[in-house]
Length: 304
Image (cartoon, rainbow, N blue to C red; front, side, top):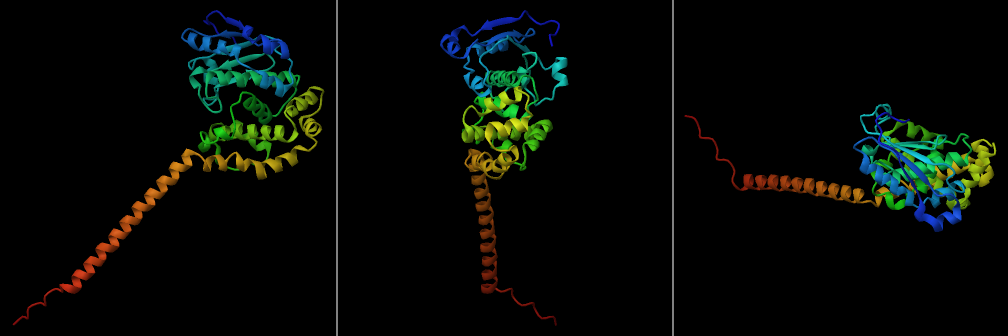
């Protein structure tokens, strides 16, 4: 993915994380590549080395960062940016331990900052490492990465209410289709995938995703690994989530959001305005009727 004309790579190790490293293994190490004009963004990305990635490590069961993570910053006029859908602000290649970031596209849901985006993509790399490169559904990949990067929760529902409320999915396959569709459907798929993963953690323990990935790494198909890690088939968990839990991650955040509040105020104001005009029209009609009764028109003069 190296492009001609890139400035020399910047490298950094998370040396400021000595206490954290002692508990989980090798710290994250990065090599950042950026073309002229993106030096400031490159320096910001380097600051991610001091970010706590313990949530992603815990959720994936990975002991630490065995390899250097390469981060490529791509401007909008680059061939790579032109080949990538405009709603994608970054992506990761887990096999190559490489992250591509389009700084001009940040913030976009679910990544509100450049730092959050990089944390999200680092989590993707760890998911692939934990699975041993074996296939993992897109919804699970994105759900783990979003939760690990601390990008979604009920408190965020109000901010993203308009992106979240919409068509009703029934299965995780519907979520995968939403990612492929992009736009609002992708934003909703991110939110619901994260909510699904949070449900799994709540019901089956904080290490459930790591247990599931370990079984995938050992050769089990994802649905088999899901049942072994959770004790229930994926279809049952889907029914439970999409029938009951999804409501709390869509309509409840929307109904309690400032967006809904102002929509309600606007509707009431429009209703009050329309009602006032209706009453004014009724009053004027009554006045005209009373005026006609008290001041009848004079009779026409007789013609001789």
